Image (cartoon, rainbow, N blue to C red; front, top):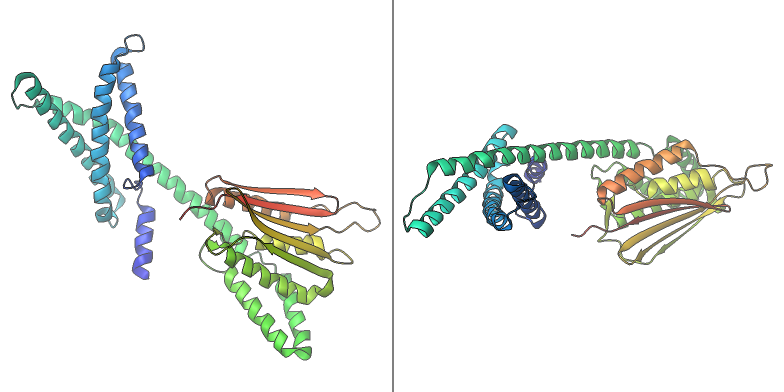
Length: 354
């Protein structure tokens, strides 16, 4: 397991994308096509644009891109353990080697087609290598900066998660302990089960992983509500309506539990008669939807005026929006509305494939 973790860390630190896969390879060909268009514009301008020359240059650059991608893809497993300067230099030289091979092949082909002689011009080959060296260096540098940005975002999200893991409020633990102290004298078996649920909840909150199945998240939320039910008794009512299988859906850890905790803390607990929560999970086309609806208390002596969510609640929502947006690559939303005396929070996202 340790070797597996080390290998994963090396892969994460490797700044060149995996060109063995379609997305990375597509990016290379897009860059090659744009480079060919730029060279064609520099050659004749927009007025004397030569489409035939563009086709030839595009084919030549595409071959350089394809062979470079092949070299970088095959070299990737052997370079994971090397330091960054060595990785950058070796990959740079592999791109130049690909350019040199393509230039040699093109020179021999042109010479034989025109004169029936197998001959190559070293100066022309050197020109091709030097021209390739400039965009190759720029692209590798962009890959490095992109990886650095991704690492910084990941570190920021990890810090957010660690802060979130620490926000299971101390008062919740103290109240649970007080309830247990009372319950032990009345129902020892139920008290033992509650302790187990409390341990499971805190163990889940302190997990190092940032990704869990939605089923795990729901189970943690159920344990939390069971413990709060012990304290609030009939003042807390809740109901789950799960319409789909959750085991194969992966989500960021702690996306639902903090919302439920806020619903209990701000919606149910302050109300004299308590309140209710309703959680429903279902699909809408390719979107998965999680609805959380909780009642809100009225302000004492002010009719139906509702207690506004606190700044801490809004901070939790902003934190969650950021984590959802990053985890699901922008294919996620967090919506909130207040209708009459109910607060409605909705999470929508497109589940990741694989």
